[in-house]
Length: 71
Image (spheres, helix red, strand yellow):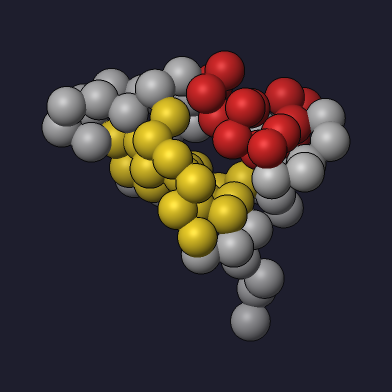
């Protein structure tokens, strides 16, 4: 079975933003890449900005990567 990425960016909410979980724990609601980078930085992930497109670290669910508004 494939290993799940430790960071999950969930589908965009109807009112904007995406819930972010790290190892199953909710860390916040991101409205842009900068919010996501800050959440990851606070969890101790170095080079968080370069991690956003690494599928072994970040899984984008229910929408395209870097898409913050509901379709």
